[in-house]
Length: 202
Image (tube, rainbow, N blue to C red):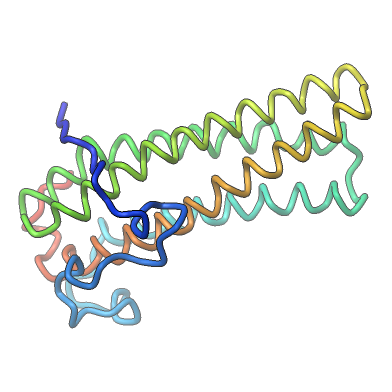
């Protein structure tokens, strides 16, 4: 298994919950802008699969937001809300964990082998994954409390637990959104600039 020291020395402005993008000097192949990715001559199946995967996580996150919104607005009773949420949340967290592990163990090492200049950004992305994992655990903890309170029928506990889940879920999804965008900004220009055939991602 590939391991690398997590990026622990990042200044505050680069921490996942605080940053608004990556340092410009980390972004290679600057001539390849986001608007050009899908029409680039080197855009291939790996790029398509990876971007679609990211969009899938964004969509699943939006579904989690929508379910809570429907409950908050009285469109779903709490029992129906939690029954719908449980499988959606479990699928989302499982898929995200697997995806992050694949990136850490396969994609990132292959990309770094092809382009050494990615090292600072890769270390930061790996530290993002560790922080996201902790946020995912917090969501699981809060959701579990909510599910238990619903089974017990304690209205005060349901309200408190739902607020806790809402806060934990919001924190996780906002951090994930920032991470996915920065990851794409760092990696996609390298995939396109180098060409998928030069990077052993399979």
